[in-house]
Image 1 (spheres, one colour):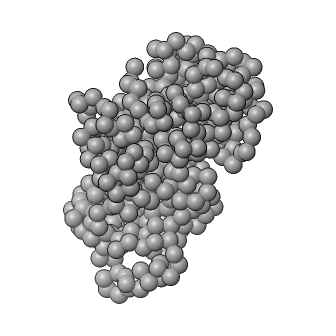
Image 2: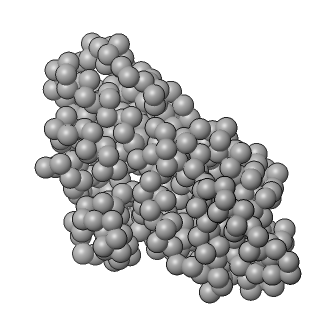
Image 3: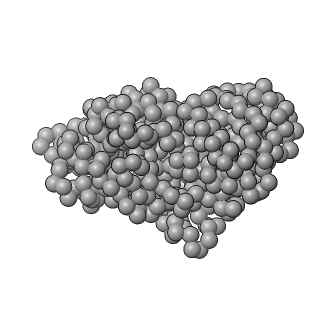
Length: 388
């Protein structure tokens, strides 16, 4: 049974789960951004959740979906509601780094595991922080993506780069990882600027970037807000290479960017370019299976990084639920939530559309080099650029 984010349906769903059988099913709360600046990320996530099988670990599952409007305060309210009123066993989401970080206190207080659909490593690190003990995440850590990105830059003659990133935790995390790895590869960062997801102009920042005359510019944003700096660079006549992060892999980005984003280079999860991956790529088969499922429902070329992450979340929960149930703990109890947390942390060699997961107490993301490739926007589509 699926519960949509409408109050009457939530109440109706709640009534179905009263009495002795109140927690017979596994209950999953999903918080996504289907409106607001991150809607281009949240909508594919929700689309994928609507495809999830109605079981987890062989047992019937009940899903409750809420929209946070890309607002950290709303995300916290949603997560608290899902834990206290809906009595969920696990949370999936939120979609972006600021909302996921905002939700950490709520999941820790509710002792409920959260599988975030947001990218920054700061969601799950450091693991010495007690509240992050309950946090896991699907997208690749920024460090994974910055590694393949700086390697590609170095191999293609980039010696100086300008940086412009979101003025939030996502941009800061990318700055921290990229600047560190750029130094290792002897790439000099000659400018460092910020912009907000809701900005309507970044002319001042772009003029400063261009004044530094870098070989390339990295835009560390996600979703459709990342189009603005690149369009402005084009309007101002910038001729160098433009790189973006894995956060751009949405079709709304391509639609809004049009010819202005042609040739953009970006690190990405395998699912985005699954059909073009080498036959021997270890993730290709699983990624292609999901791509075919998703595109048969939503249309050709509709799959995104974020859709793949959401399908990977179901696969991760399905695998962990099977093991959590073997402990004898019953869904709907504190013991089961703890068993789920422990099972998630013990995941090994699980191949999902964007990589192979091996989690442990020090790593609540679990991807390695099999989770990343370089992409390029070619003829208005995401294409495989290789890993070198």
